[in-house]
Amino acid sequence: MSKEINIENKTTKDQVAVLSFNEITPSRGQLYYDVFPVAWKVFYLSAGNNISRTYDPTFSALLCELESGNTVRSRDTRLTTLGKNHKAMLKDGFNKFIDEPQNTAENTLSITNIGNEYLTAAIGDGKKAPLMVQKDILGNEAAVFIPKTKLYITLTRNYKENEAIKSEIVGPKLVVDLASLGANVNIIIEVVNGQVNIRLA
Image (tube, rainbow, N blue to C red; front, side, top):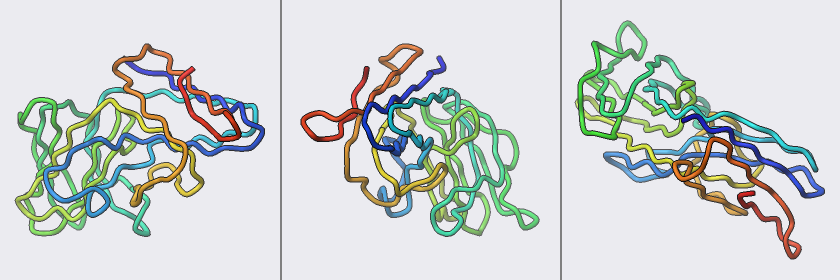
């Protein structure tokens, strides 16, 4: 089920909310080393205003690059379902998916590098926006993504959409499990006892 995510800024100052899905377990490496959550949506909220975005719960497989070390740029994409493994390699100067996907472990999405050059791969939403990226996948290795339904909302001014999050975000934070909520997810940014707070409406 698609989710309409609405955030309302009830404070008297402009706020920047970063939304990410960062509970995805990779097959190798450590978070913030070669596997990064991605700023899925960034809401620029002026004081007293609100904004909405739709989350499409289907998935896509992405071959991509990290430009300037942070921004994720997709080079080849495929809409897919969980339980599929996609083969990819550098071919004719471009990273490309090869052949049709094969069945793999339930509730996972994997991308296997069958070539000899490093690949960077990502899992994306149904609109092919990256959710989690893994870089430097060696030949005959796979990036294995296990998507979760937890959405992390944090307040920061350091990130743009499609940018890999490479360090811990310190500040007000809210974690919501989209699977347990209805089609409309309403979130409020407000000041409580002098501190900025994020909560479900």
